[in-house]
Length: 277
Image: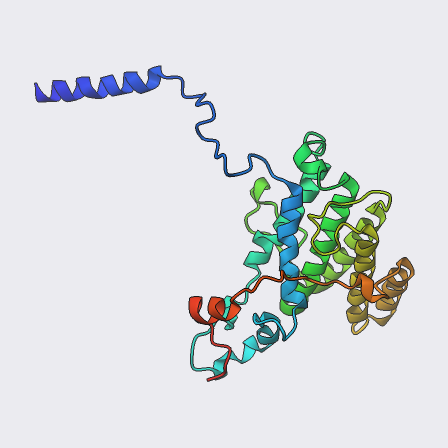
């Protein structure tokens, strides 16, 4: 009798749940405090915040760029610190700024997405793609300079079930970066604009074109160490496009005037020790 009751109870539960329409819950799963679709301006703003790790100076108490060049000498330190080899990774760059830029490119290249308000409010499609490619190139240049081979040609293909992208050689990355940046330069439309979601140049397309050309010149100068002729050729083309020649067009990361407790953030919250033992 006990088993019959349990069987009847199980069947009742099954009938109850299968009889309900599980396809429409209205807006019960919509979070009113979260966006329901991606906003390319917001994606770009967050991607821009990662520039500070390449451009900061000693006046900013968050000295990653000063400390990371010494991560190879961590063996001389008797504590396992935040600057050891195991923690020098590119995961956050692929997860946030690079992926954000790739999503901007994808949205602005998709005929069903490119005209949506959440996309076009950042600017015209061509300029969004161009600035995203330029920022990606700037970040990739620094990453490959520090670490050498990286996923580039097969990056961001998880949607195609490529979970083990090939690590391209630095030579391949340099060549691809130069080609991609040249294409991006030609995509810029100076008659168009970007919104203030661009926190680096406030939507100034001319400034982005200059950063694009200057990045290609930096790539060419370093390439000249191993291939002088090719480096000279690439530099000449980038120089002709016009790089940064005035302070007004410098790449600056402007911090808010509000007092931020980085000493507490690093020293207390994360217990980073920037003083050699």
